[in-house]
Length: 309
Image (cartoon, rainbow, N blue to C red; front, top):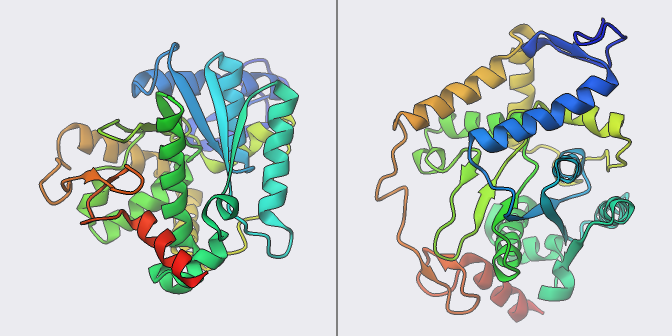
């Protein structure tokens, strides 16, 4: 397979685009496409401050690298979850994020869950009723809370995450399968800011996972290859496997599914309703918006953890 731009040996073949590129041209193409998506979905402007949530994985580090190469004002945020079974997952993830930032002279904020709230994620999951003791639900709740808090309190205009197309389509498939309209209303490349909430964006939402893996490898970005030890058996992984089979038979199926969904949203097919947009008020403890009466879900979790301490 030859590069469509120069005829040299291709490093990646993207069947859905009918495009094969060599290393040089792929490393130019990926940032160009990211810039195009940023402008198309009006994610942020050149003068806005961006906080990139990084996990040590290929997607988030590649996103930070791309924004850095494009000249945006982007700092990083790493959340230490205390998931250290087996390989020392969290410790290794943090090391790779710090190494990445130091090599480029970038600023990385680090929030350690155990230090700030007394317990790491696995311990909080055992205390919580969420997810029947599995850490995933508590992990998601905690990360959303911390990411918004840090971005809001430190004056960032936008929070960027490294969700790729495979991530987005798996969530979309699950929400469509259950016709979860309250979630479908909010899914998209941009979740606009509101009282107490910063704007959240996904600049990699149209890149396949393998494309981001190729970018990280070709750029020499060292990232953690292992999945989270608690991810095994997750429904999202099952959905990804099903969608990969479809993509293998019908190249471009995932991208088409996602883009047609965005077209439907743009046409008002998933218009917000009173049920999908619950009334919010500030949590009396942390000040973050919540639909709960009294404390937000996160503060309730921490309060419960402190009672068990």
